[in-house]
Image 1 (cartoon, rainbow, N blue to C red):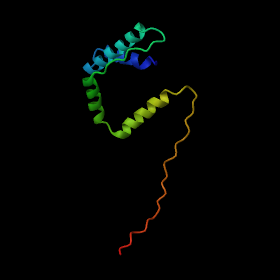
Image 2: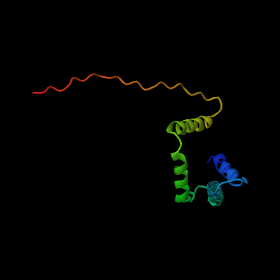
Image 3: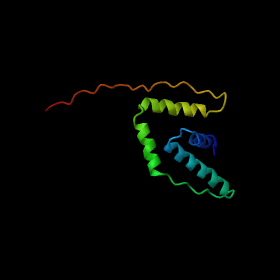
Image 4: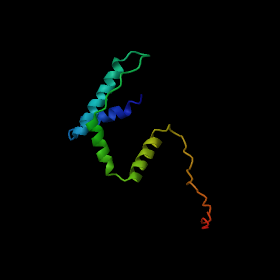
Length: 107
């Protein structure tokens, strides 16, 4: 389990100007840590339930963001998660071959 995103949620939640969404996310992160600490080694942890209102708020916030920006953010997060010194091969664009199709013959 990567603890850094959980700690970031908690840090954001305890900021003086934290929104109610940030506080809710922080409380959820605290519950996740508590569940991990209370679990028995080798046993599955109890899953946390999602707050539908928090999910709806997150979706509503992302609805106004351009898809290109969301993809750029996701790519940046994934690259930041790579180990130090890892290289990413360059990506070549998809190339489609257009094959001309003759029009149908009319009898």
